[in-house]
Length: 188
Image 1 (cartoon, rainbow, N blue to C red):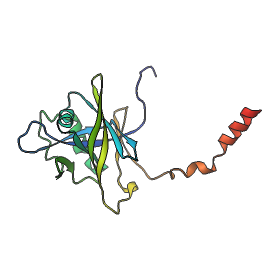
Image 2: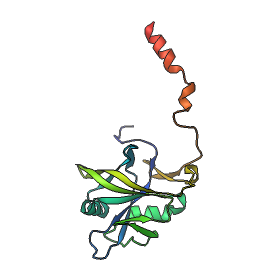
Image 3: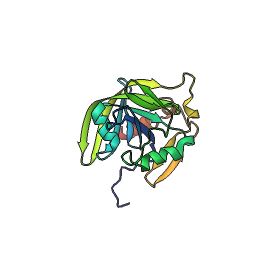
Image 4: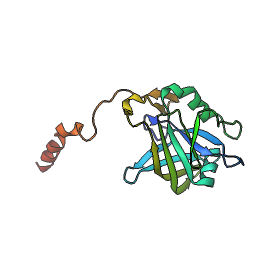
């Protein structure tokens, strides 16, 4: 492959909820992105990246707050719509049932919403990367992560679904002793 790509397959798709900066009466705007990552658990940090021309970027700069909404596959058409239609061209405030947490809108229909406050902002060429602290996690108490059936995106421009669990973190490697053999081989 000759192209230089951040080829991590696949990436989670989320919907960013922001308060429109251009409205006198608070109105939600939703922007679909795949440029999102957990940046830490203690403290709870998220990183998101938006193009500098996005209305969502303008809204985050204006308020310093946003929501990260985790959609299920049932929302694929609406999620894709929020990624292809600009908030400058269409009112996306009613694409999802919206609840406001203080001045941050979130999609009430989605199983997870993270209310975030920007801690840092870095611009790299036309991308704006935000590091944000998760101030509130909104999710059902009895939620099972495997039931979410999330949406993933591949750099082949295809959406993928999540599947059943394949193992348990910090458990699967307990039986792997290959590292011992490698150290023994290095000693000889």
